[in-house]
Image 1 (cartoon, one colour):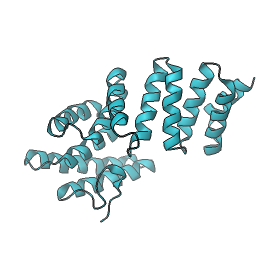
Image 2 (cartoon, helix red, strand yellow; image 1 turned 180 degrees about the horizontal axis):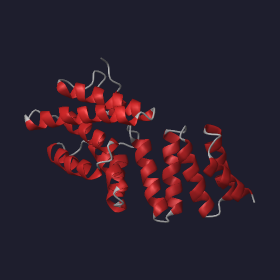
Image 3 (tube, one colour; image 1 turned 135 degrees about the vertical axis):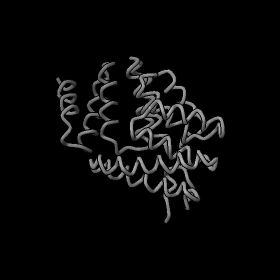
Image 4 (cartoon, helix red, strand yellow; image 1 turned 120 degrees about the vertical axis):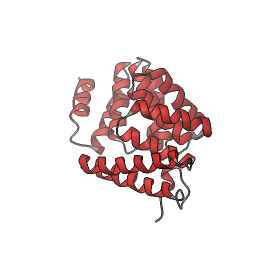
Length: 212
């Protein structure tokens, strides 16, 4: 089976048992995208089991820890992401797959300073990496929550230059532009969100506000 390198692996994917864990993770993610959460959970649990078995047998590779932390993040077990991520970075300090995932986990734990540190570490080293759009988005989210709207605008804009098809990201960009009174750019951002998702009430409401 051929695995896309979008997850940070080579074209042939990881070797050995980790490949089975990756397959379960990917199936679970696809099921989750289809809102089949119970089935997704079963595949995620199997991915975790395979990774934990590798670790217990002292056969774990950096791929093992990457798949494990991705899966735990999908399961919303953010403290476990941090715990295993720290262990992984002791083995491979520059595994940017782990660094980005830990940035997400810290964000969802409301530890925005650590989230920002990990995400900035990722984009400073891999500004065009596979997860760079997501990293820039989370940087924007942190700045927005902190009220640093100009910084958030830059981060969201960078994320959208790399991945322009995300309606949520355009909506968030509209929000921070609206917050500082940049109404014409805010209108443009809300309109882009609505072109991508015409049934987006928050974007419609934002557009109505800034047009008044």
